[in-house]
Image (tube, rainbow, N blue to C red):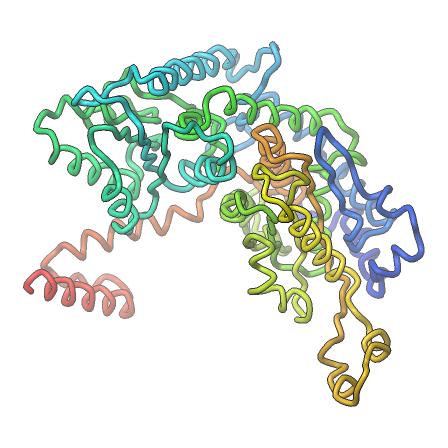
Length: 546
């Protein structure tokens, strides 16, 4: 099925041509009710999409596109546990991990809710032991430091949320995250921790992930240098995995293995036991509040009409910007220092999910899919890359994210921060005409540099404004983006839940590693790879010799 031949797609395409002269600045002049029409209030969140290059007709045509894509049916299939990840023959049920209802959820005829509740209770009991000082290290001291070793979804979500929820941290517990295969990442952590009071959480579904297991084994060896008793490993290492055999072989007591399931994708896994280090850092009560926020958005997504459905609107606007206005990227701009890791998290969520060139039917596609997601804290970005956003010819849609009230009461900061965010959104939308700049000129020099001060404007943006940044509101925010990505995948006719594109690099890395440690010249790679390998081997051996 080629979506570009669908009637709804063609109608949007024709409408985009008719909108070529549209400017959002003019739309606000013509319609004083525009903000009211294109914003939604939901449980402490204001979502404003009025600065997008859209009209009533644009949205109507986009909603038709969603309906023609059979979105409602796919949404039901997602929540009902059908195997919509068809290339891996799996259900996609991260939503079940935060389902607060009493309703059963079935996979292959079995209700999975009791298993989820069992793991959550096991997490809570373990966390209580650590927080109460009942979990003791090999010298009898309580744990005060958690080091999570994982990568990708086993790292990005928990790490981002731990940083974002700093006002909710348990004072006597410090949580650190190690993901990079570069030894500097782990080395930086182990120089600052005490083996007697440190607990490592090893997060790997298969317990075979290259980066995670290299770091885990290095941490294990470091720990054993401080105790000669291998049985002490069980007091300082726990696993988040499904591979009990490998976990036991590592030295971890399988009673301290926290399970999750194959219907939980890595980038959607923070709601599962993968969230254990986060829950250790903020407490199970706040972890559950995070789940509740996501559940509220799940309910909103399932029950709200498309016209008032925030993730559906987010997705449709993203498709409008990507496929019909030609935008190749999306900038995530949190105006909150605690959300500094959010762009990295959303980058994986969007690009690993929808960065595809083959549709659900196995056919190569001829249309653009996932946008390049990037970003940084907005206030710092103003002094780094905003010049390009304002005056280059590259269209970059933006998501501004902020809160009315800060977790830190420093006088004067929050109002100035919001003023900057609102001003940038307005400036990017309105721009500044040659006439306006000329009118402001007070000297000949001012008149000479008029062209340099002209801004086209018309840069589309969304604004997410929360009353407070809390576990509940962050749960809402993440679920909004998760469902946005799902909706876009359905409309683009993609499987958003596999990631075969990363497999080739893993396979080749293992082959290159085997050849690097071999004394033979294999000559089985291209000349560039062979040249790089030979240079590395020679330089590496020189260092060993010295």
